[in-house]
Length: 210
Image 1 (cartoon, rainbow, N blue to C red):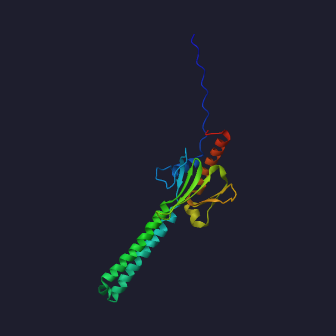
Image 2 (image 1 turned 180 degrees about the vertical axis):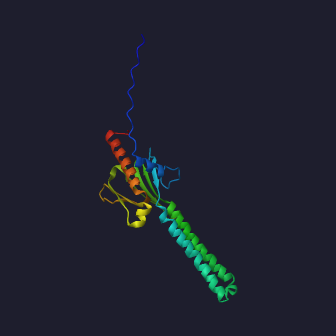
Image 3 (image 1 turned 135 degrees about the vertical axis):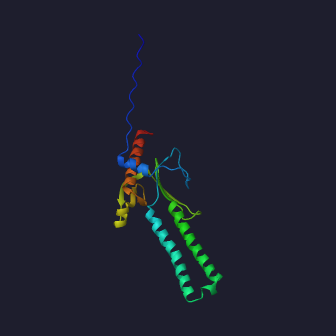
């Protein structure tokens, strides 16, 4: 009679993320993009977040109004007093320079919004910001050094639109908090960071990846 092969031990069940953490991972998916900083060895992105749209569109719309209304009002007033045609190219030169000024401001506002990034990886939190193409500021905090975390929402707009700050207290000599400001659904971001921090601490205690 042939020997019966030994039974293989059943694999241990992997811990599943909570429903809220799962939603956070889906709403803040890992994206393929060119980062302005290098990733470390074996580092993968878990979350990529930007500020809420409130920090981009209301200001952009207001600046568009500032760019258009004075030109329209000035043209109407100059036409009413009968000197618009006399100004000719002078008027249109002023209009072009004025529009170029506001176009540059709008472009920089869009650029800064899309290059103000927070990333949570399997090793750390990264705050990356570029004011313009020749400027870069990067700050990081290791997940294992994150201690207390809190969510801050100030005022009715942040509460209604569901955005706010995630404040991460870090271990170290200076004890400076790591601030993730103005992000949508900050409670879910906090939960995702908390889950990654706990996983990293378990790996450190086990001496390697679980």
